[in-house]
Every structure is written in structure tokens, then in C-alpha cells.
Amino acid sequence: MKVLGINFGGRNMKCGEIMVKEALFAAKKAGADVEFVRTVNMRIDHCSGCGVCSMKRDEGGNVHCIKKDDYARLEEKILDADGIIVAAPVFSVGTTGQMKNFIDRFGAAHDRAALDEIQKKRIAEGKTGDELLDPRYFKKRYVAYMSIGGADTPHWVALGLPTMTMFGTSIYMKVVGQIDAYGQGRRANPVFDEELMGKCSELGKRVAEAVGKPYEEVEWYGEEGVCPVCHGKVMMMDQAPEVYCATCGVKGTMTLEDGRMKICYQDEDLKVSRVRMEGLYDHYWEIEGMKEVCIPKIMENQEWLEEQLKKYKNFDETIAAMEE
Ligand SMILES: Cc1cc2nc3c(=O)[nH]c(=O)nc-3n(C[C@H](O)[C@H](O)[C@H](O)COP(=O)(O)O)c2cc1C
Image (cartoon, rainbow, N blue to C red; front, side, top):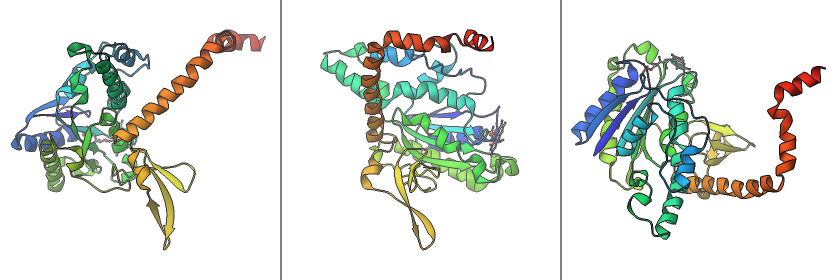
């Protein structure tokens, strides 16, 4: 059993590193082989949206990003791991740019609903061994998040955990728990906070103990939040009284009870959380539906479209002509 600790935070021995290592000590005691990765010196460039990663996957290979940097090294370690503990500081209210870069490149291409559908198709075509997708895409994997913030006020870290959670969402990792460790500025060092270090240790133990368990049997470790599925605290108001969990997409309805706001959830809406396969499939079919509409639309209007797009392609010339 391999438990990997990753810190997307600052240099040697910063808060996130200490907290992840504390969790790894507990995972080791619970019988795991552990490894720690510090990403600060890794080059993980941003996703340019070229689509080659999923094209390779759809055309008979595995997911493969063509950018030449340290991304693939980290991707390999994640695919090999059974359990993962990830920490990241909050920068500008959300997770770090480096972690977001990683998520953008790892997430969409490893969408579990797409991978399941492609694998089914290859099996139906009689493909075997290396002709199938990498089996590591389908293994049960357990993850825990630690968001580290300097500020004492929780709204200054509001998007830390919600943005981190996308790390394991698309490939369908089971979230064992999370710690919203804000207020680190005043603490000076997390080791001064015995309670916090205890939580890190417990989370590490829980990740190791979760490995191999059916996902439904893994008990949540962390604050309850307001979303009954992912335990997130951030809700998006779209067309009030409807609200959506920003982390996992579950829909709720706001009501007032004795002057207090309450959110009610319907059972069928809880199923389409994106931390569940139903939610991932919901989005997969949404994308497939878009392709069915867009491809014929573009093919049928190719000449007209090219004509329409000329002024955007030749932006500088168009602007110059407007100035004449
Ligand atoms: C560029 C930058 C932006 C930051 N933005 C926030 C913020 O919005 N909210 C917050 O609570 N802390 C913020 N911080 C403070 C860090 O989250 C804090 O120092 C944290 O302890 C860093 O984690 P580390 O010690 O593991 O590197 C910011 C720090 C930096 C460098």
C-alpha cells in the first residue's frame, strides 16, 4: 500500500510540508509505504488546451500530455499511489497557481466516465493487454486535502479547499477528509498547535486505513460544512432560491425557518454530485451532446464561418481599417 504526500506549497519545512509529513508518519505507522514530494522546484506549466492528451486517449493510446516539463513525473507518482495526502497554501483566496496548473492538465483528460466508456469500447472490440487503457486509471484511490492559509479570517481562504478538491474529482478518488488550516500567520509554525498536528496525524491514519475499502464505507474526517455530499462550505447562488455547491455541484434550495436560512436537498439531486460517478457521467453526456450538435453545425457552415472569422483572425488589420 503506497501513500504519497504532496506539498504544493513553499520551500523546505514550510507549514504544508510539516503537516503532510505528520500525516505520513501516521500512515507509515498504519502500515503504508510512504513517499513525500515537494513541488516547489518542479516546473509544471499551464495547460494550453491543445487537447492532444485526450485525443491520444480517444485514438487508442493512453492519456499523454506533450509538454516537456515535470508534470509527467508527478502524474506517474499519483497513478502509482493508493492513498494521497495533498497540501497547498492559499494564494489570493484560492489554491496556488502551480496546483491549479497540475489539476488543469491531470483532471479533464483523466475523466473517469470517459475512461470507463473508452475501456468498455476497447474490450468490446476484443482488445487486450497494452491495447487497453492503463489499469492504474481505474484503481480505487483515496485522497485527503490540507489547505493552509495565513489569514485568521475564514473568508480569506474560502476557495482554497473547493479549488483543491478538483485534484482527485475527475479520476474519481474518494475524499477521506480535509483540514482547513487557516490562521497560520499568527501561529508562526504548525508545531505550536498540538490540536492541528493531531488532526494531520489522524487524517494520515485514516487515509492508510481507507485503502482497499469500498468507497461507501469510508467515514468522513473533517468539518461537516453545508453540502451533505462533499461537506463543502461554499455555495453558488444562481437563480435564487436555488443554490449549487461550488465544490461538487449538488443542487439545493434555500428556505427560511424561524428567521434562519436553511438549505434543503432532494435525494435525486445529491446523486449528481461530481464526486460521484453519476455526476461525472452527467457531465460526460453533456459534453458528448455538445459534440453531436457542434460538429454538424460547423461542417454545414464551413465557408460562412470562415468568412465571419476573418475580422477576428486579422484583428490588427481590422482595427487599422476602422481608423482610416
Ligand atoms: C502570493 C501569496 C498570496 C497569499 N494569499 C493569501 C490569501 O489570500 N489568504 C490567506 O489566508 N493567506 C494568503 N497567503 C499566505 C499563505 O497562505 C501562508 O503564508 C501559508 O502559510 C503558506 O503556506 P506554507 O507555509 O505551507 O508555504 C498568501 C501568500 C502568498 C505568498
